[in-house]
Each structure stands twice: as C-alpha cells, then as structure tokens.
Image (cartoon, rainbow, N blue to C red):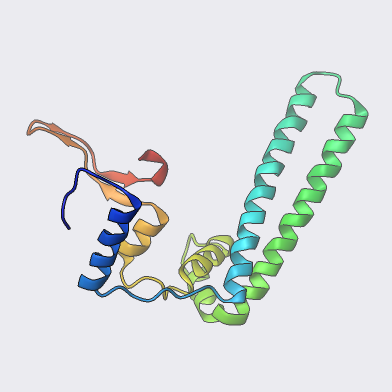
Length: 168
C-alpha cells in the first residue's frame, strides 16, 4: 500500500479496492436466521444480566440502610424474580436453537472440564460451530485475547500475559 499524507473516503476506497484486487479475500457469508436470533438472544441476556446485577446491588443497598421500605424491598424482589425468569427463558431458547444445528459441537465442548453450557453455547454461536476460523490464533484475536510481551529496552523485561481487548 502506498503511503499518503491525505486521508479521505476516496483514498480509503482506492486502498480497499487495491487490497481486494491484490489479495484473495473470502466472500462474506451472511448470518442465517438461527445465528441471527442466537446473537440477539445473547445481547438481550447480557442486558438482563446487567439489570439483574444492578437490582441486586440496589436491594443490598436498601438492606444496608437498616430500615428498608417494605414496598421498595418487595418491588425489587419481584423485579429480580422477573429478571431471573427471563434469563432462564433466554438460556432455554438458546439451547434449543443451538441443539438444532450444532448438537455435536455442543456435546464435545461440554465434555471439556471447565466448559459449562453457557460458555459452550457462546463459543458455538460466535464461531458458527468453529467454521468461521481456520486457526486458534484467529479465534483468539476475534474474541480479544492474545498473548503479549511487554519490553522496554534490553534490561527491563515484562512478564508475558494474556491481553484482553479492554486492556488496549
């Protein structure tokens, strides 16, 4: 690629075009209906889990005050119960959808010690049954975890560790 002092949409489009012509770029595969629903369910579940944590924290805060309002306390408990029910429903729907298309992948993943059903469901959905990636390093980059080494000069050596996307 040629370096340029000017960065515009037109120059970016030319660079992308040149890259596409000079490299073999795989075609984009759109999500099927099941994959799209699974991703929507994961986003909704994430939202509910955050709300549930906030409700638990609010409930704890009210209890710490010493004399919590019975109305507030009951309302928060009802809200928490509702959120728990919604999360269970989403998990059940995810399991149903993933089993339709990726039962074997799910069974293999859950046979690994330390991999539970939620982790297995997530991995199967985001990787499309591990067909999106050719190498483990590609999956690590996609998920946002990669081994990093931090060094400064020749005498100061940092420890190797896993870099999370939030660290960058």
